[in-house]
Image 1 (tube, rainbow, N blue to C red):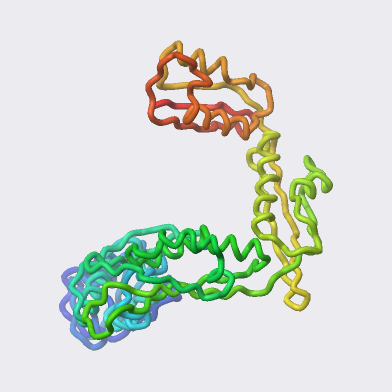
Image 2 (cartoon, rainbow, N blue to C red):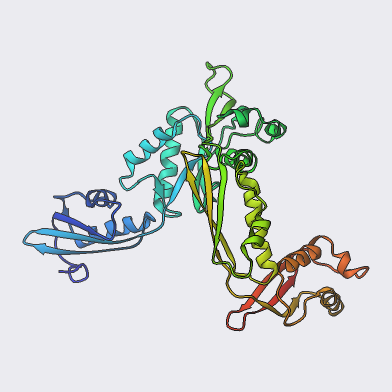
Length: 416
């Protein structure tokens, strides 16, 4: 019988459990998370409450079940649809290792696999476990969690942060000589040293200041690991106030730039693309110079009205010769032309001044670089457009409204 038909069914022994819709969890793990055990006596109400507990975890978009009665036994089948989960970052918990924290979470949460959903009771449970582990080592603190962008790759992560004792960074140790000896990093030392220890902040700093050093030097496969902390000061003090931040760095080989080949390009020929890339082959592959080259090519397409153009450089690394070659795939898309300029939030006179300053006319190629420059002028150099006429706005919003079939664009600018 189904769950609906058996709403008033008497208790029976839970004899068998199966699961559908997930490859990440076993039926035993799901059963444990639902608060059930094989062999126990259950009613249909017990099964519904168990399904509710699973749904509230946040791990599943859908939780359905059905059961059949075989004599005095019940055979239960879970039908699950998984929800997305995110990796975890323990931001400022130097009193305990990641391994200790993960082990504590796994011991109490049978469905924990190293990631967690953005919402639901699982997040609350993880926060509680972290607070318990901190209390075990003498730290009384509250733990908050927030969804944050990942630093070195696409996607998001869950940052768990301690609100309580503040541990400042007393020193920072870079895990490779290029960073350790870089004058530029010493100049920015104050951005890290003397401030509260935060792995997330350290990773942001490494992305903005350390990674460019290695890319420019040809270390195109450099790996910057998760920062660690070592207590500094008197080891006999129960609560040290400073830590030494340690950032692991695996530089990888220094690569020379080999051949760059292009495909999918019709508007821009190979000589022009090579000129825009402006990175000679046979020399150290300067990753920052390459990045700037790819961006110049994208800008050139945008200047010519190819708003949907995609430039996708695909590297091929040869470890033996320490050479990198690039096959660059270009999808140019259609060329768009300007249709009309639509302004909101201004007086009639101010609109007239903006319309006079706007140089593109209907039918002209929509030059995206011109559009971006015009917006920047409105935001930071408004006198160039309005002269002595007084305008009052704090924010300039914009939107390019495409007509996909006609390949035209309306430019919408809103002043607030």
